[in-house]
Amino acid sequence: MADFKIAPSILSADFARLGEEVVNVINSGADIVHFDVMDNHYVPNLTIGPLVCEALRKHGIKADIDVHLMVKPVDRIIPDFAKAGATYITFHPEASEHIDRTIGLIKESGCKAGLVFNPATPLDVLEYTLPKLDMVLLMSVNPGFGGQKFIPYVLDKARKVRQMIKAGGYNCRLEIDGGVGPANIKEVAEAGVDTFVAGSAIFGAAKASDPNRYDTVLKAMRDELAKAKI
Ligand code: DX5
Ligand code: ZN
Image (cartoon, rainbow, N blue to C red; front, side, top):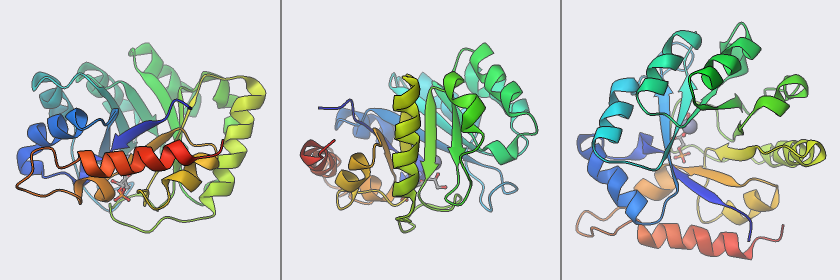
């Protein structure tokens, strides 16, 4: 089977118990912590910053942390997230004046670098950046909020990016973010995606009384992935 990874978006977790939520979801078999950073400027919402990333590391979280920057400007905050324990740092090309420099900054700070494309943003910058990237993240909703509906035309985009990664023989993950859950994860995998962000589908499945409450939904997602024809 392909090297599929599931990345719960903590945007939909209970922030009052964030450490416990992340421990539970990792113990239930999730692979990567997806960490949504919003600035009320690039996107119309405000979330969490480097202090919270550092707090998760201090809480003992060893899993990769995938920092999705929905901020403008981008560069100033990169070293802070690197120090705070980020594994991946991804940013939206339209939020940086100098895309190559921003990718360089992420790499120099010791993190893996990724570019994020909104649903209607063309992929043209990949022509020159793909060889340097560790991750391409395709937004399948408009960024800013959890719990939105999956935009199906992004599947075509995924097929295009998978083709580009394959053609160049690059070692680059292809991630999707927004509206993903057990009902559509198979179709998304068949379009070439290998890394799946899911917020409301995972954290919304919680039952306060059940400490292993994420096992069922993660298993449902893995069972669907096992059926994917790729
Ligand atoms: C949206 C964020 C997503 C969000 C996904 O701007 O980037 O990571 O949490 O949430 P769901 O899975 O609920 O669509
Ligand atoms: Zn995200």
